[in-house]
Image 1: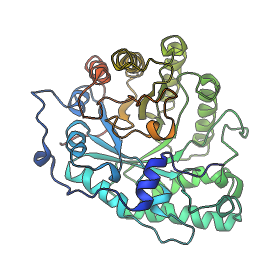
Image 2: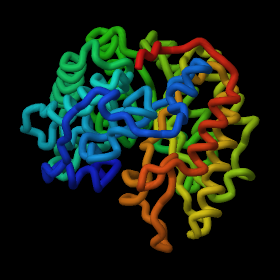
Image 3: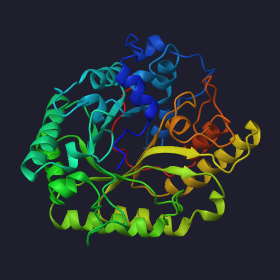
Length: 389
């Protein structure tokens, strides 16, 4: 099993200690001239939607923070709270410095925050071996996982608006009778109860923060050949099990890593709408948490590719935002300058990835226009969090 964090680039930069440290300035001091263009977070707020993005401390260069402060109403911690940063080896003390920097940035810019992730089977980095995790006894594993979760919740108590409590814990394959993945070290060592325990810890130690279960692969068949419908069914089955056990799950996070290639014909709009309604009928708030687009299969030429990527955003968000239980749209980055896809999944033709709303020079792209249009025409809903930027 690959125990690396999601982005190899962020691992190398974080582990090497070369993340750029910039002063955390108030949003007003970082203002970007935009010729009167309304920030995305404000466009979303008009419809009761929170718009935000992930960002990491190593991305705080000389120019991107100003754009992020302007456009995002919510900051999703991309990798500053993953274990390769937080606890890089089994014997290392907890290192909250990267997380503190990015949370302080959000607070200085009056942004909401979601912390990611409390329980996940990846993000450990090269300082952890498989035996360090899979070789633990039940008591040792509980002490390790729950100890880190408690410390993390205590450290940021009252400063997070939400937590991804359990990330990628369901699957239609390698699963138990309730849809939970069994090929996870915490499942193997502690048992399936680690998921419910993590939610109870979150409720007990940071009760005001929204508690989220987060998953991917619900829109189309993914690049590995997994179909969306079985993944949707497994997720719902797992949620039903947690709710039956009185586990305090409050929200469903849908990652939204979309595949551009032939999206229009592969996207099952009816099935996806029904899935969102099924989540809402269970009393769950829905958040899109990691929205970006894998542009494999699209031409290398920038103009046509950007238009096709924008069309995917339009089709997806027009359907998703019709469901009023969807309260937030969180992009997995705002600029092509920093995308995990470039490092982890480069295009075969060598063309730079273009998955996000702004290009590497921080100029808005057709993807920006598509997101803006979807927010403008979304139905109004009751706001989950009040923004005071």
